[in-house]
Length: 150
View 1: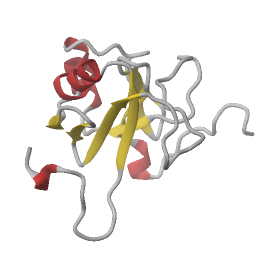
View 2: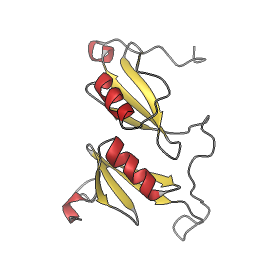
View 3: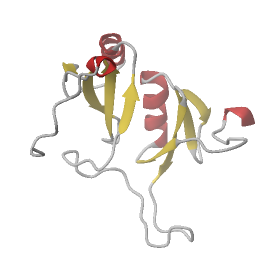
């Protein structure tokens, strides 16, 4: 481990994404071997640099002094998501093919949504991950509004 690889800015702020995982080794392998991240710290917490950000992973647990009423646990209902990781790629067809070959299971193949081409997959704990490629939005074509919003 090199201190310069850790998500610790000299000034200002940077964004990381924390995931509560059931099996750190399994999740570490997914984010490094399937999605191509670099393991910066293997455990306590596990930190994987993924493109220009970091994924931080630890097992769940009960309240701590700094979060006295909060229990951490992986998702329990795959049909409900309150947030998800959004990965933007340059060539979604290539990424879909590569990650599928490495064991990623996508919900659908990439779908053209006017503003972008996108698809979703889940990590080993069931976290939803959107993979998208900007297409039409680069030329002023926006996506349709979400269902039920109009």
